[in-house]
Amino acid sequence: MPALSLPAPAHISAQIPRNTAHLLRGLVVTLAVFLAVLLAIILTRPAWAAGLDKRIGWEVHQTDKSYAALLRDVLAAVKAEGLSVVTQAGPTRGAAARGITIPGNRVIGVFNNDYALRVLALSTAAMIEAPIRLYVTEGGDGTASLSYKKPSHVFTPYLNEGGTQLMQIAAELDQRFAAIARAARD
Image 1 (cartoon, one colour):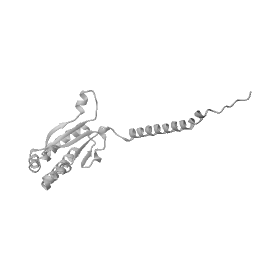
Image 2 (cartoon, helix red, strand yellow):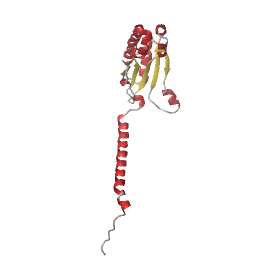
Image 3 (cartoon, helix red, strand yellow):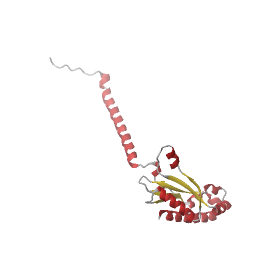
Image 4 (spheres, helix red, strand yellow):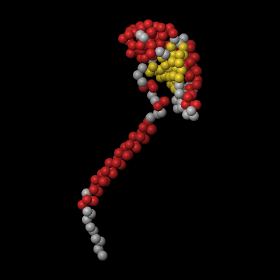
């Protein structure tokens, strides 16, 4: 018996190309999303390792030292430079107490009373920036870095009140922070 060929009903034959096109669009979108996620995973680093050195006004000093060694050396360099550690904070110990392991991370607030009185005489508002912070972070490779916002950058918003005298103080602090970084790094 010869094969019987019946034409497809009009409502089915009209939908085949549209469904195929819809499926292809969906496949392309899914593939694009997959590739974007894959690239994001490959090209990004964890938040704690993100490029601090790419920030305006920041100084970043990479070292070969361990986190503990750099932290110890930063604290010694602050004292040697005639400044005081006013505050220290970091999530590393608290996370460990909760059973969570994260890279070493410590913020160290540094200033002294002489600078506090000099800044306060020029701008009450500028004192919100004291103490100026140093930031010690541990990298994924076991080394650590020291980062900080330059004091001249930190005090720039208060130029209208403190003027050139405030910027002179900030320049002095820039030199002291650079000396701390050199001593801690070496």
